[in-house]
Structure formats: C-alpha cells, structure tokens
Amino acid sequence: MSDSHDQKTAYPRRPDAISATVVAGHIGVVMSPMYLGAILGPGWHLVWLAMALGLGMNSILNLMHECAHALVFRKKQLSDVLGRRVLGPLLFADFDAYRQRHWDHHRYLGVDGETKDAYTVDIRGWRVGLLLLRCLSTGVAIAKFRGQSSTAQPAPRGLTWLSSLAVWQGAVVSSAVVVAWMARPADGPGSAVMRAALAYCVVYLYGLMSVTVFMATLRAIAEHQPYDGAPMRGRAALRNFECGPLARCLMGAYGFGEHHTHHREPGIPYYHLAEATDRLAADDTTLRRGKGYFRVLGEIIAGVRPSHLSATTSVQNLPDPDAHRRG
View: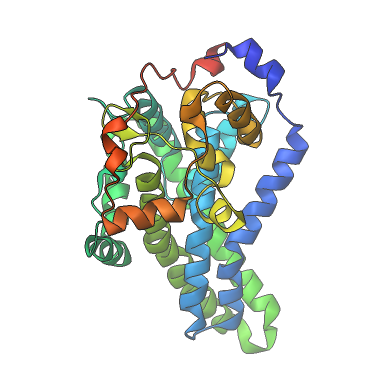
C-alpha cells in the first residue's frame, strides 16, 4: 500500500466547506420523506415514503462508514463529530462501537476474527424472501441494535452515545411537529403532533429498521459473498462494481462501488476511489470493475455457479484500515 504521504499527495482532501454542503444536502434529501409524511398525515402514501427513506438511509450508512475512516473532512475531529453526534444517533448506532467493528472487519476480512457476518447470509432462491420477511418484521434490526453491546465501550462513552441518541431523536420529532404545524396551522397543534408522530414511527423508524437493514445486507452480500471466482481473502470475496446512477445511489454511494479498491487502499476519500481504481487496475487486473450490484445479487439468488469458479484468485495482506490516520 502507498504510504500516507503519497496518498495525501495523489488524492488530496477537498475543502471542508464542500464536504459539509454535500453532507447537509444529502441528509436533508434522505429525511424529506418523513417531513412530507408529517405534512400529509395518514394514508397509504406513508408506505411509499417509508420505502423511499429506507432506501436513502442505506447511503447515509455508507457516509457513516466514511466517517469511521476519518475521510469526510480534512480534520479527523470533524469526521468524528459528524459520525458520533449526528450520523450514529440518526441511525441508532454507537459510532465508536461501529468503527471498532469495522476496523476489525478490514483487519480480519474472511478469516478468524471477522466481525461482519451479513455477507454470509444465504439468499439463494426462496431464502431471499425469508430475509425480506425477517427485515420487514424488524427482527434483524433489533438483533443488530442489541449486538452493539458486543463491542465494549467505557461507561462515559456509552452514556455519551445514548445521550446523543436521545437529543438527536428529540430534535427529529420536534422538527417534524414544527413542519407539520407550519404546513397546516388551521388543523391545530394536536393534529400536527399526531401527524408528526405517525410519520416518525412509520416513515422514519420503520423505514430504517426494515428497508435500510434489508438493503445494507444485500449490499454486503454483493460485495463479499463468493460465488463467481472473484478475488478472495479467506472466505470473503472482493469486488469492484460497474455502477450506473441508480446502483450508485442505492448501493454504491460514498465509494462503495469501488469496494475492492477501498479494502486495498482504505485511506483514499470516496471521491477519488474511481480514479484510483482506474489507475491501479492498469497494473492489477483483480481491481478491474466487474458486474453491477444488481446483476451479482441476481446471480447469487439464482444460485449461479460459473464453471471458472476454481480459478479464484487469492488476495492476502490487506492493509491496516486506520494506518493512514497514524501516518
């Protein structure tokens, strides 16, 4: 792997003002279905709004991943604040526990010590429907929330994330009430509270706990589940994807489409990963972009086992994910 100095020179960080604008705009767009639901009130449209918010939240999860690598802003502390004080509470996630699990995922990808098991879920044939039902019932989300305690945090830090969660969620509910009342003041404050509470529970909470969890699981399966002779590290595949606008938005946001490159060079900001992939793939064919997310998932669901499976390439000695932060 290139050292920290070479990476910073070849792939410089963009101005923080641009990153902050992108982040604020992205969060605003993703959260907008909840506010629209608070304005409209009860109706079947809440189901579609929950789906829209749930799909969008998968990309916010990708953004939290970028914070875990301290790559959103030039100063690590700003990425920490965004992840710990905003995105973590927004996603009901302990950011520090998430970061520790994610670093271990990089270090122990596909071998003993691996902390990520979502990509091992069997979705062949009818099993993808079973996964969908488990996500729609919120069972998977509840298990993930409880599982955050598996990464021990000091008591003060644990209280900090819970207090941030309470403050953030209070702000979300309050803002929904304000939007609902300002849009329809003639209906009175009681109606505004009712509509906001319904939108918060159905569109935001349920969309996050069902659709987002389902999409995040599918994304992990596409990135790491072996089936087609992709380069391997231990029992995990590594892939770069061809991403059109839809796939980039739903799955590959914040550089996830260049997933193999990210595992190879975890210190490169997401907006340079496409360029880095093209440059590195010229010398290393394992980094070339392959099929798209949806095609990979379709083939896994169909149980495709290409004849060249035995030609799997082994990839070893992936870098320490936070080495660039210590450089």
